[in-house]
Image (cartoon, rainbow, N blue to C red; front, side, top):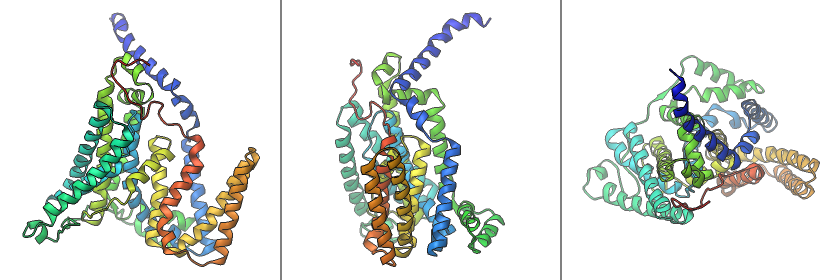
Length: 440
């Protein structure tokens, strides 16, 4: 009885095979060969932990690997990572989303608006809805009307800033309103309840005891693990689940195959029956929703919405997307790095950031050696000179000026992108206008 079904099943299988071939021609297979494997990722994490442990021993900067540092880094990484993941969804479908910052603003404001009235979980849902609305506006402009993606994204950022500032004055700062009576004003919402957290009993205290001994590598690993089992927000757990779900949705489902084909060759996808408009709309709305959740996380974390709360994290999220080569795992690693630097400058300040000068100098010397062996003498020379200058700076000073400390996350962004530029490959049709029925 199964034989008659084969002719009916064949066309569907054939379409999927052609879609996969489309992604291969666009460079997806090449990018897959160049991506890091799970053992390599684990080795990178272990190598980074060993480097930080050595740096802590040499410089005495114990805050580098403290559990509090990792906990703060995790909190700082979540909104950046969600913004980067949002950018990944949009660009995999061929739409550049520079408006992530504005969508985060809408999410943070929506979370503050409903959060003080109904609690943090409603705030998270409101943030998702606010960001999704921004994504829908961006999709209408770029997909339906063909507006330049960069122009639309910039307009979204400006529009969102104006909207949230106007509504904050109207709803939070209005004289005699309930919000004003509860502590709201033109720049912030009334406070909301805390998001529930969880701690693993026994394990948390045991890891804390090991961390306080300051043993080489063992205490540093205990600090890292302790941050994952002590006072972890359930919203952080949700963010991790979103990353895992995005990977399976985009790389392990027919939906993801169709969506990614729209970012590689929308014309070829259309000839195979894919509704390119529908998939682009879905991707950009999801992109906005993820950015909105990132903005909501910021508001929920400090219990209020504040003016200018996103602080450029949408743009850093774009950097994590590029650094991560448009893959969820890479975005997560980039967000962790930038979150670590952000938390470092907030918690530890000049002395601890000063210790990192030595680590960056060693990394640059290793890069210089690799470039020299591959024949890139100019790049090797520049890396060596920069490393020597950093070593001299470290030797002649005891701390770093506050202004430079505040620049640390953004400097790290530029350095990482510069080092990763040669292995990156964006979706082939990203940013290009598409019209149904157009020729290849």
